[in-house]
Image 1 (spheres, rainbow, N blue to C red):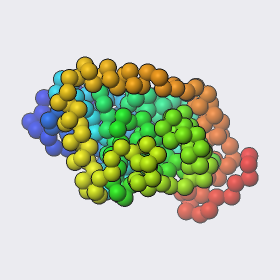
Image 2 (cartoon, rainbow, N blue to C red; image 1 turned 180 degrees about the vertical axis):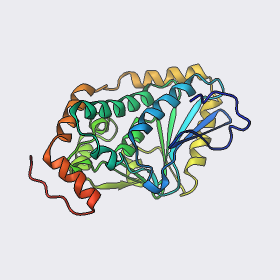
Image 3 (cartoon, helix red, strand yellow; image 1 turned 90 degrees about the vertical axis):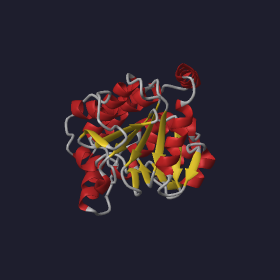
Image 4 (cartoon, rainbow, N blue to C red; image 1 turned 45 degrees about the vertical axis):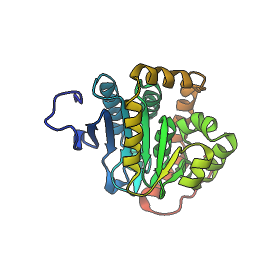
Length: 271
Protein backbone atom coordinates (compact mmCIF):
# COMPACT_ATOMS: atom_id res chain seq x y z
CA UNK A 1 0.00 0.00 0.00
CA UNK A 2 1.06 3.62 -0.47
CA UNK A 3 -0.97 5.92 1.71
CA UNK A 4 1.08 8.93 0.66
CA UNK A 5 0.19 8.48 -3.01
CA UNK A 6 -1.81 11.15 -4.82
CA UNK A 7 -5.58 10.72 -4.50
CA UNK A 8 -8.46 12.70 -5.98
CA UNK A 9 -9.97 13.12 -2.54
CA UNK A 10 -8.22 12.00 0.63
CA UNK A 11 -10.90 13.57 2.83
CA UNK A 12 -13.17 10.52 2.50
CA UNK A 13 -12.61 7.07 4.00
CA UNK A 14 -10.70 4.86 1.57
CA UNK A 15 -9.40 1.32 2.14
CA UNK A 16 -5.68 0.88 2.70
CA UNK A 17 -6.18 -2.83 3.42
CA UNK A 18 -9.04 -5.28 3.77
CA UNK A 19 -10.03 -4.08 7.24
CA UNK A 20 -8.49 -0.63 7.55
CA UNK A 21 -9.77 2.72 6.24
CA UNK A 22 -7.90 6.02 5.98
CA UNK A 23 -8.82 9.61 5.40
CA UNK A 24 -6.61 12.70 5.64
CA UNK A 25 -7.86 16.23 6.12
CA UNK A 26 -6.34 19.34 7.69
CA UNK A 27 -3.10 17.40 8.35
CA UNK A 28 -4.89 14.83 10.51
CA UNK A 29 -5.09 11.18 9.39
CA UNK A 30 -8.02 9.12 10.66
CA UNK A 31 -7.39 5.37 10.69
CA UNK A 32 -10.54 3.27 11.15
CA UNK A 33 -10.60 -0.43 11.96
CA UNK A 34 -13.41 -1.52 9.64
CA UNK A 35 -14.97 -4.71 11.05
CA UNK A 36 -18.08 -3.24 12.63
CA UNK A 37 -20.12 -6.48 12.45
CA UNK A 38 -17.32 -8.23 14.39
CA UNK A 39 -16.99 -5.39 16.93
CA UNK A 40 -13.77 -4.43 15.11
CA UNK A 41 -12.03 -7.55 16.39
CA UNK A 42 -8.36 -7.60 15.44
CA UNK A 43 -7.15 -10.23 12.97
CA UNK A 44 -3.44 -11.05 12.57
CA UNK A 45 -3.41 -9.02 9.36
CA UNK A 46 -4.72 -5.86 11.02
CA UNK A 47 -1.77 -5.68 13.41
CA UNK A 48 0.69 -5.60 10.51
CA UNK A 49 -1.53 -3.24 8.48
CA UNK A 50 -1.66 -0.74 11.35
CA UNK A 51 2.11 -0.85 11.67
CA UNK A 52 2.77 -0.47 7.95
CA UNK A 53 0.23 2.32 7.48
CA UNK A 54 1.59 4.29 10.43
CA UNK A 55 5.12 3.96 9.03
CA UNK A 56 3.95 5.42 5.72
CA UNK A 57 2.04 8.23 7.39
CA UNK A 58 5.22 9.21 9.20
CA UNK A 59 6.77 9.88 5.76
CA UNK A 60 3.75 11.86 4.52
CA UNK A 61 4.41 15.64 4.73
CA UNK A 62 0.64 16.29 4.80
CA UNK A 63 0.16 14.39 8.08
CA UNK A 64 1.04 15.73 11.53
CA UNK A 65 -1.31 13.73 13.77
CA UNK A 66 -3.19 10.44 13.64
CA UNK A 67 -6.59 9.47 15.07
CA UNK A 68 -7.22 5.75 15.57
CA UNK A 69 -10.82 4.55 15.92
CA UNK A 70 -13.22 1.72 15.16
CA UNK A 71 -16.13 1.67 12.73
CA UNK A 72 -19.56 2.45 14.20
CA UNK A 73 -20.53 3.51 17.72
CA UNK A 74 -20.56 0.09 19.41
CA UNK A 75 -16.87 -0.79 19.51
CA UNK A 76 -13.44 0.75 19.26
CA UNK A 77 -12.24 -2.86 19.24
CA UNK A 78 -13.41 -5.88 21.20
CA UNK A 79 -9.86 -7.23 21.08
CA UNK A 80 -8.23 -10.05 19.20
CA UNK A 81 -10.35 -12.17 16.89
CA UNK A 82 -10.88 -15.40 18.88
CA UNK A 83 -11.26 -17.52 15.74
CA UNK A 84 -7.83 -16.31 14.64
CA UNK A 85 -6.39 -17.10 18.08
CA UNK A 86 -7.85 -20.59 18.00
CA UNK A 87 -6.31 -21.25 14.58
CA UNK A 88 -2.76 -20.56 15.84
CA UNK A 89 -1.44 -23.99 16.89
CA UNK A 90 2.36 -24.23 16.80
CA UNK A 91 4.59 -22.51 19.35
CA UNK A 92 6.53 -20.67 16.65
CA UNK A 93 3.30 -19.35 15.11
CA UNK A 94 2.02 -18.30 18.53
CA UNK A 95 5.23 -16.42 19.26
CA UNK A 96 5.17 -14.75 15.84
CA UNK A 97 1.55 -13.67 16.36
CA UNK A 98 2.24 -12.21 19.82
CA UNK A 99 5.43 -10.55 18.58
CA UNK A 100 3.43 -8.86 15.81
CA UNK A 101 0.96 -7.48 18.35
CA UNK A 102 3.76 -6.15 20.55
CA UNK A 103 5.54 -4.61 17.56
CA UNK A 104 2.37 -2.69 16.71
CA UNK A 105 1.96 -1.35 20.24
CA UNK A 106 5.63 -0.30 20.13
CA UNK A 107 5.20 1.34 16.72
CA UNK A 108 2.36 3.49 18.06
CA UNK A 109 4.31 4.50 21.16
CA UNK A 110 7.51 5.22 19.22
CA UNK A 111 5.92 6.93 16.22
CA UNK A 112 7.14 10.43 15.44
CA UNK A 113 3.45 11.32 15.03
CA UNK A 114 1.11 11.75 18.00
CA UNK A 115 -1.61 9.08 17.93
CA UNK A 116 -5.01 9.85 19.47
CA UNK A 117 -7.41 7.02 20.30
CA UNK A 118 -11.09 7.85 19.66
CA UNK A 119 -12.76 5.13 21.73
CA UNK A 120 -16.35 4.45 20.78
CA UNK A 121 -18.01 1.67 22.79
CA UNK A 122 -16.05 -1.43 23.75
CA UNK A 123 -12.27 -1.30 24.13
CA UNK A 124 -11.53 -4.79 25.38
CA UNK A 125 -8.38 -6.89 25.44
CA UNK A 126 -6.22 -5.81 22.53
CA UNK A 127 -8.58 -2.87 22.01
CA UNK A 128 -7.83 -1.50 25.47
CA UNK A 129 -4.13 -2.20 24.89
CA UNK A 130 -4.26 -0.11 21.70
CA UNK A 131 -5.68 2.74 23.78
CA UNK A 132 -2.87 2.27 26.32
CA UNK A 133 -0.32 2.58 23.51
CA UNK A 134 -1.78 5.85 22.16
CA UNK A 135 -0.61 9.27 23.32
CA UNK A 136 -4.06 10.72 24.05
CA UNK A 137 -7.37 8.93 24.60
CA UNK A 138 -10.78 10.50 23.93
CA UNK A 139 -13.66 8.23 24.98
CA UNK A 140 -17.33 8.35 24.15
CA UNK A 141 -19.75 8.34 27.07
CA UNK A 142 -20.65 4.73 26.20
CA UNK A 143 -17.04 3.51 26.22
CA UNK A 144 -16.18 0.43 28.27
CA UNK A 145 -12.61 -0.65 28.94
CA UNK A 146 -11.50 -4.10 30.05
CA UNK A 147 -8.79 -6.76 29.73
CA UNK A 148 -10.76 -10.02 29.98
CA UNK A 149 -8.16 -12.43 28.56
CA UNK A 150 -8.21 -14.63 31.70
CA UNK A 151 -11.71 -15.73 30.66
CA UNK A 152 -10.14 -17.63 27.75
CA UNK A 153 -7.00 -18.70 29.60
CA UNK A 154 -4.65 -15.88 28.57
CA UNK A 155 -3.21 -12.63 29.92
CA UNK A 156 -2.89 -9.17 28.29
CA UNK A 157 0.76 -9.08 27.21
CA UNK A 158 1.15 -5.35 26.57
CA UNK A 159 -1.44 -4.51 29.22
CA UNK A 160 0.74 -6.13 31.89
CA UNK A 161 3.68 -3.98 30.79
CA UNK A 162 1.98 -0.62 30.29
CA UNK A 163 -1.09 -0.92 32.53
CA UNK A 164 0.78 -0.43 35.82
CA UNK A 165 2.36 2.79 34.52
CA UNK A 166 -0.93 4.29 33.34
CA UNK A 167 -3.49 2.84 35.76
CA UNK A 168 -1.31 1.75 38.68
CA UNK A 169 -0.41 -1.77 39.77
CA UNK A 170 -3.53 -2.50 41.80
CA UNK A 171 -6.01 -1.32 39.17
CA UNK A 172 -4.15 -3.32 36.51
CA UNK A 173 -4.37 -6.41 38.68
CA UNK A 174 -8.02 -5.72 39.42
CA UNK A 175 -8.89 -5.57 35.74
CA UNK A 176 -6.59 -8.43 34.68
CA UNK A 177 -7.66 -10.88 37.37
CA UNK A 178 -11.40 -10.19 37.35
CA UNK A 179 -12.11 -9.30 33.74
CA UNK A 180 -14.35 -6.48 35.02
CA UNK A 181 -14.96 -3.44 32.83
CA UNK A 182 -14.75 0.25 33.67
CA UNK A 183 -16.70 3.05 32.01
CA UNK A 184 -15.37 6.25 30.46
CA UNK A 185 -15.83 8.30 33.64
CA UNK A 186 -13.81 5.84 35.74
CA UNK A 187 -11.15 5.54 33.04
CA UNK A 188 -10.83 9.34 33.03
CA UNK A 189 -10.34 9.40 36.80
CA UNK A 190 -7.64 6.73 36.52
CA UNK A 191 -5.75 8.69 33.85
CA UNK A 192 -6.31 6.39 30.87
CA UNK A 193 -8.80 8.82 29.28
CA UNK A 194 -8.08 12.54 28.87
CA UNK A 195 -11.51 13.64 27.61
CA UNK A 196 -15.04 12.19 27.49
CA UNK A 197 -17.18 13.12 24.49
CA UNK A 198 -20.82 12.48 23.53
CA UNK A 199 -21.62 9.28 21.67
CA UNK A 200 -21.22 10.06 17.98
CA UNK A 201 -18.91 12.99 18.68
CA UNK A 202 -15.77 11.20 19.83
CA UNK A 203 -14.01 11.07 16.46
CA UNK A 204 -14.84 14.72 15.80
CA UNK A 205 -13.35 15.75 19.13
CA UNK A 206 -10.25 13.61 18.56
CA UNK A 207 -9.79 15.26 15.15
CA UNK A 208 -10.11 18.70 16.78
CA UNK A 209 -7.31 17.77 19.17
CA UNK A 210 -5.29 16.49 16.21
CA UNK A 211 -5.78 19.79 14.39
CA UNK A 212 -4.57 21.70 17.45
CA UNK A 213 -1.46 19.53 17.52
CA UNK A 214 -0.98 19.91 13.75
CA UNK A 215 -0.95 23.69 14.14
CA UNK A 216 2.13 23.47 16.34
CA UNK A 217 5.75 23.07 15.22
CA UNK A 218 6.09 19.44 14.09
CA UNK A 219 9.64 18.99 15.38
CA UNK A 220 8.62 20.33 18.77
CA UNK A 221 5.68 17.92 18.88
CA UNK A 222 7.86 14.95 17.90
CA UNK A 223 10.59 15.81 20.40
CA UNK A 224 8.01 16.50 23.11
CA UNK A 225 6.42 13.09 22.64
CA UNK A 226 9.81 11.39 22.55
CA UNK A 227 11.07 13.05 25.71
CA UNK A 228 7.91 12.39 27.70
CA UNK A 229 8.16 8.74 26.68
CA UNK A 230 11.85 8.60 27.49
CA UNK A 231 11.41 7.60 31.13
CA UNK A 232 8.80 4.92 30.55
CA UNK A 233 9.56 1.34 31.44
CA UNK A 234 9.93 -0.54 28.16
CA UNK A 235 9.12 -3.78 29.95
CA UNK A 236 10.57 -7.16 29.15
CA UNK A 237 8.64 -7.82 25.94
CA UNK A 238 10.56 -11.04 25.27
CA UNK A 239 9.51 -12.48 28.62
CA UNK A 240 5.95 -11.30 28.05
CA UNK A 241 5.93 -13.02 24.67
CA UNK A 242 7.17 -16.22 26.27
CA UNK A 243 4.54 -16.08 29.04
CA UNK A 244 1.62 -15.52 26.67
CA UNK A 245 2.90 -18.23 24.30
CA UNK A 246 3.11 -20.65 27.21
CA UNK A 247 -0.52 -19.94 28.11
CA UNK A 248 -1.60 -20.43 24.50
CA UNK A 249 -0.40 -24.04 24.78
CA UNK A 250 -2.36 -24.90 27.93
CA UNK A 251 -5.50 -27.00 28.06
CA UNK A 252 -7.25 -24.11 29.80
CA UNK A 253 -6.60 -21.84 26.80
CA UNK A 254 -7.92 -24.47 24.39
CA UNK A 255 -11.01 -24.83 26.59
CA UNK A 256 -11.39 -21.03 26.76
CA UNK A 257 -11.30 -20.68 22.97
CA UNK A 258 -13.73 -23.57 22.48
CA UNK A 259 -16.15 -22.26 25.10
CA UNK A 260 -16.14 -18.78 23.57
CA UNK A 261 -16.81 -20.08 20.07
CA UNK A 262 -19.48 -22.49 21.34
CA UNK A 263 -21.07 -19.75 23.49
CA UNK A 264 -20.93 -21.71 26.75
CA UNK A 265 -19.23 -21.23 30.14
CA UNK A 266 -15.64 -22.60 30.21
CA UNK A 267 -14.52 -25.32 32.59
CA UNK A 268 -10.96 -24.59 33.66
CA UNK A 269 -8.76 -27.12 35.47
CA UNK A 270 -5.47 -25.29 35.87
CA UNK A 271 -3.52 -27.24 33.30
